[in-house]
View 1 (cartoon, rainbow, N blue to C red):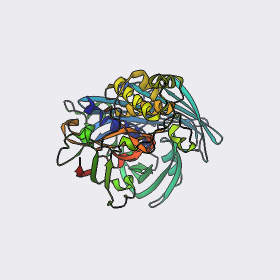
View 2: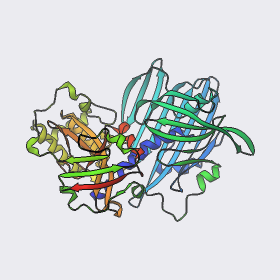
View 3: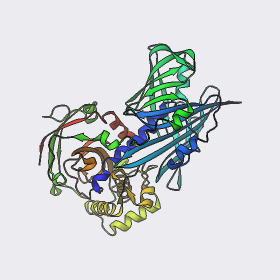
View 4: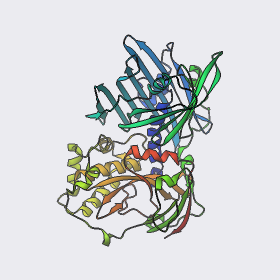
Length: 497
């Protein structure tokens, strides 16, 4: 069952990238989107208004989703709505995602309030935000718990439902650019959107010849390109995941093109990085030397260490004799970031703290405590693919998940007892995932024991084997960078033992 958990980390990235990239499209929705199982049915209940636009979403030539947008003029501003429905397959199981957003703005499209929801059972998250001067007040609901957070603003940020209108208000022409502050309700982070008009043109829309702009949007290193009318209607868009969005009629979007009798797009097959020769005994490897290429992976890896070329990596498992343990909790302020509480890593929650302390008992050495937590998470969580944005409290309650759930829960538990822990993501070798020997996208934690040591609660490894190739570290915001290389990566294993 372990091999079936590997690539589902990528599904979570698709969920996040979908929310972070597709919200840049004009695939809009309402916050009453329902659960994923009800998502497509609810679209059939939508009453079209004068400004309702429908879209379908395609990947690898197959339809994987649909949605609609709406913009309603109110007395003192606008009400903007979005809803999307997405269907993917992995390991012969269909997975459905619903995202929803409703925002209110003033007459100049400046944000006042928003509600965002993402449902990918058993995971769900609801975020609401209200602009009060230079503060964005947030309420985050996940796992039945509500948390509040304040974000200080230099400028009122844009959301997916507002930024193209703001850009078009500038009456742009070919070559014009604009940087806008943006708030991502999935990663709960402030970003900068860079927009550029690549060219102008004309298109036939509903029997009329209308002026259009080809606009490139860059966000967190990810790009999308859209054809947009001067009224702000998106005719088509292609994003960094290779998803293509096309304007269609309601009937086409909701009820047509689903490919009766055809399997949905298999995300595992799309993400596999095959190798020429299988790696025997991969779970016991201690050293790996490999060369990665494609998709700008050299940017993710950064400058190579001395003696290596760009794209080359060497992974060595550090012997336990070289670890340096210490008494917990760690109090060195240099590790504050890797001991911190966050909306999805709720290490300060009483439930998390009680469970973590019960697992380690009277143990006070960091290495012993980390080993106990690693074994507990591996043994306790049922190995089951889960799609969604992982929350430690939800995972603790559901007690199931894939590598992202194992990593998130371990991180919360370890931080709760004072062990600096960070999340890593990249590639790991599997001989049987998806039926193709190769490397697959994966996530795992790293704990500080004199140096950062990779471990793997999904596999029950302490430490992790040498086929774990780290490409990024950090939470889901940082992990979005992996979208750049998905489907474009090649790997040559030069030496392994």
